[in-house]
Picture 1 (tube, helix red, strand yellow):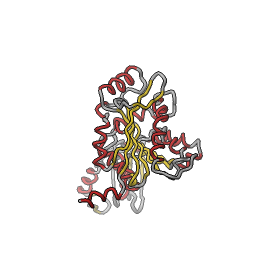
Picture 2 (cartoon, one colour):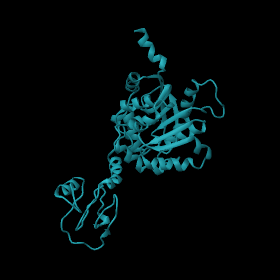
Picture 3 (cartoon, helix red, strand yellow):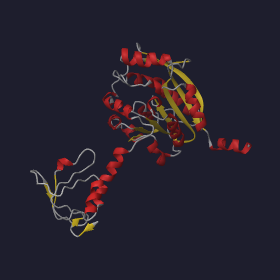
Length: 345
């Protein structure tokens, strides 16, 4: 392929398949950058490049009289960028990412678009705390969740991550929206205690599996499952990162006609309580459907409780009715519980 100091016709065709166009005779335009006589893995002869022709699609068009490469190892610089550009998550919905990307600046405005989530902490934080304490006999009253490791999936700006950290837990917050994590990082930096207890990462749940298998005492997915693409895969990932006996906490919206009327028509289109396009009714999941996914995947449902939001007072309340919002607590089976069916058989 390489013949002396020039590229053969096969070599030119090979470079063209990588996205490089190599015209044989192009007049040198003004403003062209010239690189010459590098050694090793650098370019070995004159190479004139227009810097503005490195396109957004990771394709660099080279215009030159003579182009010679000693090897293609320099292309490794761009290979990782290509991978990152096209890497996809099977649970993360790109449309949802764009929606929350545009709202990232509003996370910590308690009177703004995320006001209902701020108010929801009055219910979901005690719900998580009290159910976790059922499995812990010894705890510090000031830091009841001390020693526990929690994964907050879809943490957004950290509205739930921070209260869990203040209860003493070591919390990892993950979110696929980089702007959300920037806001969360900035906000926790004002509290030195939280800065030590909380870690934030820009990633999907699948991307945490290899390094966090059976690592967490609890996984929290609050107002998340109604935004994911593949709910069953999402639940399977939650199971894998939980320790045996660990807890999964979910808060979400039921799939009913009432939830469509109130959560979408009223809350989004009429009252503007939440931004338009925040929810997709088809992604809402009923408690029965959720349980039918949790149970076969090794997660036993312990509690399901209804939640209702009063838009006039701005507060949430517990209710026996689950037709709108609800909270669910499920527990991963312990190792010995897995063995029992096999032993009886």
